[in-house]
Structures are given as structure tokens and as C-alpha cells.
Image 1: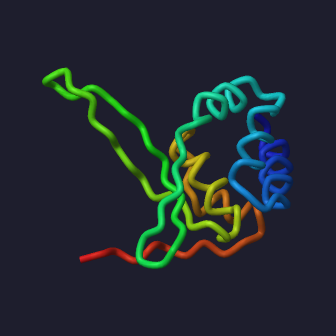
Image 2: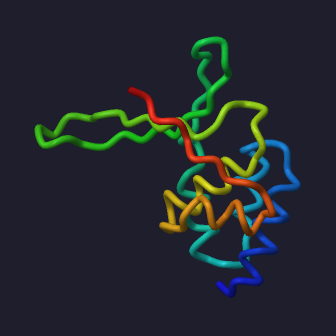
Length: 117
């Protein structure tokens, strides 16, 4: 994917207001790799109420060394957050692109997450 195509895609995704809409746009992308990865993520997100926030998690199940199913949960964003959080997570988690770069392409300021102790 050319950098200009990436910029256009990120900017178009940032016009959307929800993770499901962004995931649908990614599944329809002309770049087969992006569309395939987005399609594989369908059904892997869960919404949970935690500490008064509606949090969106990416949930996967993998077999551990004992052959047992083990669930992995990663906080992606909160419901109502700017969609750039999902877009940056998507390109970081699936394609190894630094979140800061995706934010820059979107014309947004990246803030390093606070580390929990």
C-alpha cells in the first residue's frame, strides 16, 4: 500500500463514529491484506462495563501448552472514544505500524498511555 493510500484510508476511517463501522470499511478495502485481516477480526470484540466505563475489548482464544483453550483479552478503546484509537490499534496489532504514526497521518495528537503500577 502506498503511503498516500494509507493516509486516505486512515482519514476516511476517522470520519466514522464506531468500531463496527470502521471494521466494515476495512473489510471492504481494496487492499486484500487489510480486508482479509479485518474479516478475520469479525466477532472478536466484546463490550464490558468496567469501573463505570463501557470498554471495548479484543478477545481471542488460543490453545495453551496443555492443549486447553485460554482466553486473551486486550482493551482497545472505550465506547464513545475517538475512532482513531481503534484505527491505530488495528494497524499496530495487525501490521506492526506504530500508533504514533497512524495518529500523525490522521492529523491527531498521540498520547502515550499511562503505565499502571
